[in-house]
Image (tube, rainbow over all chains, first blue to last red; front, side):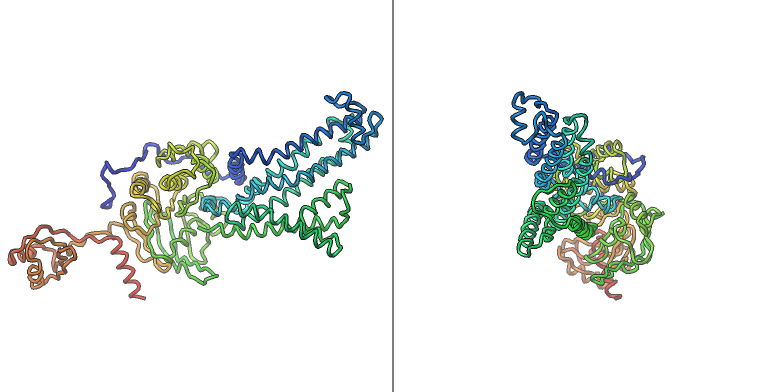
Length: 319
Length: 311
């Protein structure tokens, strides 16, 4: 033993040597190495209640309102007053342009589908808010706090790490975009006569999943890319909103100046509107432009985002 | 048998064309080992290679018989190694327990094992009271101990400790050194302690490896590097120290006055009787005679100077 190793007993710091025992178990990393990261990330995100309430309130309220309207329209299609409205059902049906007791069921079901699409587009903003708020700090905070040193000193690949982070953001996309859509569809299915909504408009289910999933993928990738470029969550948050506003304004300006609607592809939001129009077979305005271009634009955003993320996280793997 | 074996390891960073490791060959024994070296010596690159974060350009690297040549090898290596980074690295928003459980799970422990192991290790490092508090509110000493705990949670074969006493006050430093010494000596863990505080290595490590310019400057047991030189003694004198020095020089012993008034005498033989003869002859009174003890710093600087002279 070296001189100086033994300190006087009175100077020894508190240490509970009795608590130590060598590990005799097995270390076997799971194939789902990203799962603990997702769990830990969601736990941290759900810990602060105020942002949760503020950010989830609008989608929840919108879901309740749209569910009620969809239920009402579906009930009117059956020629009955919706529960709770009493005699007002007929009046409301007239006010909503419904056919009342003699209504055309198919027409009403199409209206339900349009409402679901309208819901998707109206809640897109809130889903961006959710994903940006909870995702902006995921890579930026790790970089700032140096937590990547702990992650990458484990048997964890960069793919696992990024998959975990992506799943955290995407979970909020699912909660803010896909889940409310499925709730409204469920209401429509339950309220329509003889499951007619499912029979006539059943494709809305997979189209909702496809549209919501693609939107979640685009926004999550973008949020993570901006986060990987930032050193603070606040910068990343500002960056995400700046990008959405700048791309939207540029797309509108160029499309009007050059009188070519294809320029709208510069804005992911406009692409979303176009894709929704095409996917759900409806017209929401005068946005009759190239749908494959909208899909390509979304694909490019995703590809570019992941290139940035992959490039930036190479630097995280540094001791 | 050695735990870590490096043979002819070369690592060059293409961007700066810097040869960080230049044919490094060393075998690290089991137990606590200190890693010394000036800035740019290759310590960080060596740590990265031992963590499987960097692959060497040439040479052989083995940790407990595993090589980081392939991706699987790198991942396997990280299962066997625990790493305590120098800088702040704790995950914000998490409690101590959550941090530990997450990292234990990532190291391959089951949910149940991760939780029980977390509590054991937090108890061991003395963080049992704070374990459910968010880490942001912890003191530097507590954070440093949590960093040590997370490196230990999966009971790795090799612990890499990068500046474990960095930023700690004297009490925290003593606590950390006690833990490191206990792990290395009482718990028989293999440690590689990378620090520029040579006193920390003297106190906690049984073996020292000094690097310079990407090569091994020396690799030897700590005791041999901080050993006593019985031929050199420090002499405390009451009386005429100058006359004593002259008399010793006359008897053939080199004598150097020290700043604190003592004399450093290089004896020409093993016998120190000449000191007393000279003292009697000059009427000086010898208060203390103690062998000169080389510090690790002194040995390290001498080795560095010798290497520069050779170069």
